[in-house]
Length: 430
Image (cartoon, rainbow, N blue to C red; front, side, top):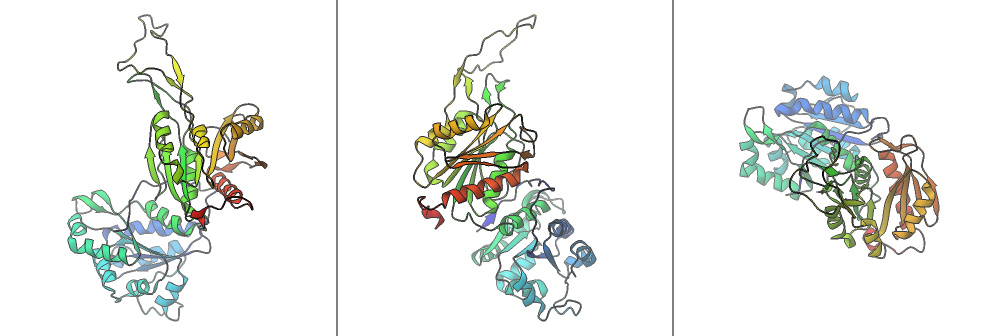
């Protein structure tokens, strides 16, 4: 069965968030007790400029009033198949033709069974049958109902017909049972919608590897050496790539962020773990972006007991000897295959361009994204960045941007470089 794992939502930068203007989403709401949560979905979509058309089933209207959706979206909430107040010649067909995406959230066992059998006895099922756009469905019900073989068979039938299933969460349900069947947080549904229609899929067919965050080099069971990286830039890059249609792997050090839905996250802690995760299958990726702040040095030895200070507390009892960690970007540059694009990051305090150009050649990279701690808005843990994209052909200076927008600009530049005349064609992007 084609399922989408529900994960924690990613907070958007509302100031710079792209819009869903000129996109039409049909939101089907059914008689699950979680129907009231669909109001948050409708509100988020409408605020992003999306033409949000809500179809509320008869049982759904017993839980949440149609006027709620009409007020939030600015569109008439449709509840009847033959609604004279709706200005469509053949409403279900007209809506289906306009839609960029159909999402039913929450979906009861009843609506799942009807759709699986091709029934069309209300406005939602008739519209769903007429839709040729991508379709998502988010089951929400009691655990025993969800796990019933009949429901699972119906979900499998829907998946085989092209529906994508957003897998429910586990936890305490409205009936006080604990198990699978809980409706995901509304932002999870919104994220899934954004993933499918927010951007042109100009990276479809490409495999992208991004590294993000810091590494932690242990000294003893209590202490470690790390840096100030938050991982925000790397996570923004991974999100941008998947919104543009790429298959994305994110190798991440310890951060307090949640990855965007659909990203394959590989968690690591140390520089060695990141080296192993990145280099193991590096040949299979078309684009590799090293945005992580990897420790340059690690303690030579690890002590399995806490290192104690002396009695007066004025000095550390033991000196710590450090050794160099493996250079991941250099290793990738040494084995870079034809058609593969390698991008690194350089955080500097002085001589930004000079050091960035040296790194470009020394690591055999195709691009270095350089920024300076001395530039306002470009430091660690910020939501913005100021980058200079350094390549063999010259430099491209970007203004102060959100990290989401900076990530988009980076990939646009990379795609332009990859598609330049005379560059080896990437077979996976044909």
